[in-house]
Image 1 (tube, protein in one colour):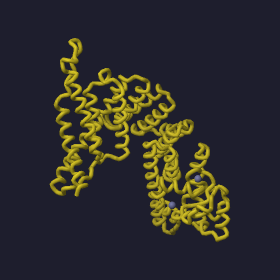
Image 2 (tube, protein in one colour):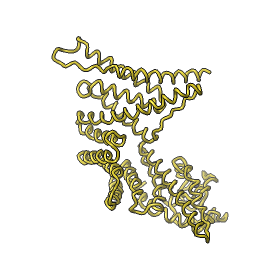
Image 3 (cartoon, helix red, strand yellow):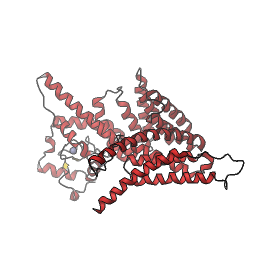
Image 4 (cartoon, protein in one colour):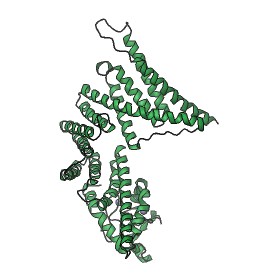
Length: 441
Ligand SMILES: [Zn+2]
Ligand SMILES: [Zn+2]
């Protein structure tokens, strides 16, 4: 998929498709048998023999104005249910169906069918409000899905999802609305993830422009802007710019929340990862530890809350095993990625040089709590064991055999860790045992 087709698609396809659907009221899909045959033979690249009846050919496909929702070339088919999404081929319909379409088909059907007019003003306004609400749902769903695809590093999937978002975003937002900024930033990230830097910078500049137009931009939005800018700087290997961007992210996130907030923690992580790329491990790990400390606090609270619930449930229902984390899933994905990244980075360097054993135990403990919170008790136990390993290696360092007279003896990781780890192990093991019992019965 070339950048130019995607560009023209996001800007041109939507209005044309909508205009057509409104003016023809779906009747163009019910072409005569002859027309249907024509439509099959229209595009040479389409293999008629493999076409399934579920694909609805457009009656008048010669109008190249209708473009495929997946690739942006001329479309010959539409979704038989909503008749509001268009495809060049069976393959692209399938791809859309796998990615997003089933989640939005109903909304698209509603949007298309809602052509009723009323002479009563209040009734008209009600219809309009309903329609706007559906657009909003559409934008929300596609935004979340595209964001998820970026988290899983699938920019090609994100393109298709974000195009649904853009198709309807401008129906609910004016070009200078604050609500449009997160969308512009996400589009920028999608392009950046696909290594299309000019387009990424273009959307970033659009977001910047909207921010500049506002008299008082909320610091949370600015934090998001600088975070996106930093991501693009890193991809372009402008590390000095990235350091500036992520510092701004931390500044505005602190202003929007506080220094101990999760949003601020993400800034510390981002900044640390730039220093790590520059080979400045000492600074990188001190920033990573800020991140870990905040995560430890956040996740421990979550863990205690879950345990409390589980204890209550044990009295009521014996085998309820569901996790009760209230944290949004996309946040959990980011936390998992970041914690593991830090753990792996630390494992790669010589711990006695840069990182104190205490900090490694802290990382292992945080990872263990994280996996407990998401219900992966095996991994939770694995990191409890890893933490114990560090504790025992620490006492080994402390023992007189290895410590020379000149070196300062390390502070023992204290019994606080041991108590915490015991608690984690007890609860994780209880879950695993219960799983074994259930499998046996
Ligand atoms: Zn296509
Ligand atoms: Zn549909």
